[in-house]
Image (tube, rainbow, N blue to C red; front, side, top):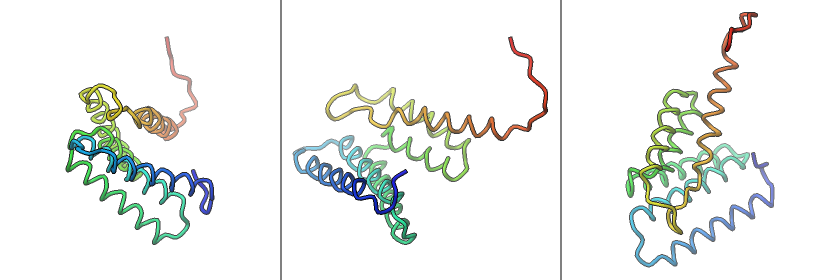
Length: 154
């Protein structure tokens, strides 16, 4: 996790913001899918910035902006897999692992139906689903009571 006040992290987020704005300017006739991805990129920038600020009010503002960008992405393309992925992450963060797992599974299904990889349709973010699913499974294993008995396995 980034450390509040980390100048390198802030510089990277500033660069990501500038690059996103430049990409948006360069696309002359964006499709709804492209616009949705731009909104999801903006959501990610806001989320990352929010995780790195100490001020609760500023963090809340950035997280609200992230949710607005995500909602705009879903409005442009309800089948955007990254929007579904972020929904799942948010459910998991709210200790709603079962709902989060469902959202992440739906995100994987959306990716399978998403257009083939190209300059506009990369699979950025997809690898994080395995990370989050693994985290759910790890927490579930840790929550199991220790009976002191070994299970029989083949």
